[in-house]
Amino acid sequence: MDRRAYLGGVAMAVTGLSGCGGGESEAPAAGEIDVTFETRASRSYMVRLELVDADGDVVDELESEFPPDQDDAPSFFASGLTNGPYTITVSTDADSQTLEWSPADCNRFELSVTLLPDGLLEYSGRCSAADS
Image 1 (cartoon, rainbow, N blue to C red):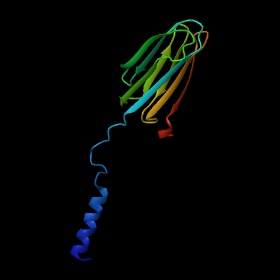
Image 2 (cartoon, one colour):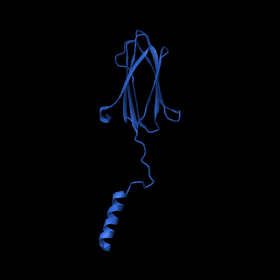
Image 3 (cartoon, rainbow, N blue to C red):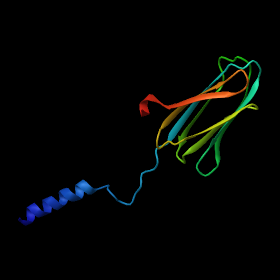
């Protein structure tokens, strides 16, 4: 093998490995959470949502009184979330529901919460279509 072929091979190997193990770590992907509420309750309930990061710090929260049978209930949105997993707690004076979400597993999380007639909570969560 002549010197020119050897140096060409080394240059290709270095180019192919650039960025692999350079000591720099990628920043975690920033996540978003979008929460919608619906109420079927026959009386008003105070609803509280708390978003807590991996360090146990409350990073965002919502507290709102939901009147009975409200069609257009408040919603909640948070973005730029990188310190997961997150604990999401939604509560009323009659019920409390907690779940975990990690932006590493699901970049955009959509949560639908229904306030039932007796003040109990029902929820369902999913990754948005872009992340499935």
